[in-house]
Length: 229
Image (cartoon, rainbow, N blue to C red):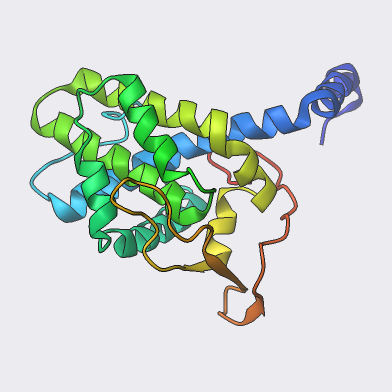
C-alpha cells in the first residue's frame, strides 16, 4: 500500500488508468504474449528437436521470465491446443508455404488468413505455431537476426488484431478455463470453414459451468509483466 508521501504519484496513476485503462491492459497483454510465445517456442523445440538448445535470452527475453507458475500453466494449455492443430493437414500446408526469410507483408497476409472468420484460442495458437515453425527454420539455418524480427511481427499482429479480444475474455489465463472443440477449421486457402469453435467453460476440477462465450474475468493486480491478467 502506498504511504501518504506517494499520494500525488498514486493520483496521477489513477488518472492515467481512468483515461486509458484499456490501452494499458492491452500493452500488458502484449508483453505477456511475448513471454508466452517464447515459452511456447522453447517447449516445442525441446520436445520436437531435443538436439537444439534455445533459451529465452536467444529469443530476446530474460532468463527467469517463464518461472511464474501461471505462465507455465498457460504455455501448457497452448501446447495442448497445438497438439490438435498438428493433426490438421490443411493448416500445416498453409504454414509450410511461409519461409523464415519471408517479407513482413507475406507473414501478415498468412496471419490474417488464419483469423479471417473470427478469433478463438485455437487460431491464436495457430499464430504461435506459425511463428515457431519460422523460428525453428531460422535456428537451423543460423539466421539468428531473423528470430527477433518474427517475434516482433507476431506482437504487432496481436496488438493490432487480437489484444482487445484477449482482454475481453479476461486475459491470457482464460484460455486455461475453456475446452475448445471444433472440426477442421481451415480450407486449403487458409479460410476458416466453420467459424468460432464451441467452447465449454469449466472449473479447475473439470465441472462444466456453461457452454457459451466465457464471461469477462476480473483483472488481477499486475505485479510484474509476467503476472497474467
